[in-house]
Image 1 (cartoon, rainbow, N blue to C red):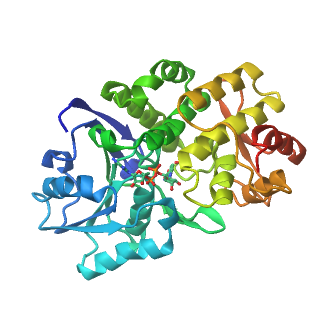
Image 2 (image 1 turned 60 degrees about the horizontal axis):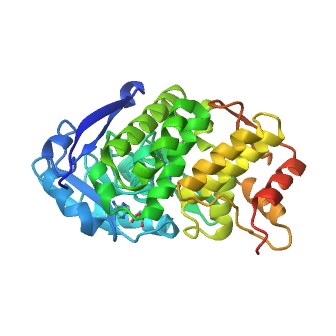
Length: 372
Ligand code: NAD
Ligand code: GLY
């Protein structure tokens, strides 16, 4: 943790549920980072078998001045473990340590740990405070912000959960140094999405800084994390519970969730599926006359340059498009069985709408590998 970058703050304005996102390096080793949180006698750090050995002791030491007891629960690592059974390990730890309703939970890890810890916090004793300490790029730019928490069901991704906002988000950029490059690429997918849906100037910037981001350049990471959090905070502040606008943050996710569920959770990383899903959604936007082919090519180049797949997997050798369509009907945006897609309605602007199955089939056929 030698390199330093000064701390920046982004705030998310949600009335009495407002909070700050701190972005800097290093942060998790400093007790001051955690000052001013709700008073409690105990804290529970929730992490996993990969992240806990790297960072749990540092975080626990920084929390020690604030809490009489700082417990740790270590979950199995992986999307395949984002389940009821794993969630129950958090409740087991809370109850075994006699944690009361003031206990503060700290989610130390990527989006899987963050989503599960948030859901545990939303439901333990009907709600205890929690803090997000995201350690993947994807979690720092997306999943730790905005209060979506939950677990997967075998029949659908993130199908069980709650909206529950953290008290604070602490993005320590220095933790990203240990992140494998495949995971950095996965995080880049969620960063790229903010360009087409909200800020084409950010997309321009990304085109010039992909190399720096992929090699963990701290200044580039600080800018990308801050701008992503600003855009997400702006959207969530207007539509916390996804009555409408917030759905644009799911650009690429309708196709992406089908890929994740169809391949089996954990085969394709969430960010990989979203990257490829954005390319598919851009093709659909183009076939609907919303963007031109140059836009599709530009986005495809960027996704590819981020080290992400741009060709979809075959999910069913006999009726691939039919399998995608079936899986996409389970999406939370679907209404009455009709799939609704986040599409690009001109550069920097997204819309949410349906599309004829025949057109969606054409896109899937054009975008998926012919190798079964
Ligand atoms: P992840 O949590 O599985 O983490 C990826 C891998 O990196 C894991 O093996 C993890 O142990 C490891 N890791 C984490 N930090 C590390 C570090 N600093 N050094 C080395 N290894 C590290 O995956 P993710 O991409 O962070 O998150 C994906 C999840 O987030 C999905 O379940 C997705 O549904 C969810 N998500 C939620 C939201 C939301 O709004 N709540 C938004 C986007 C994604
Ligand atoms: N990741 C999409 C959202 O938070 O709404």
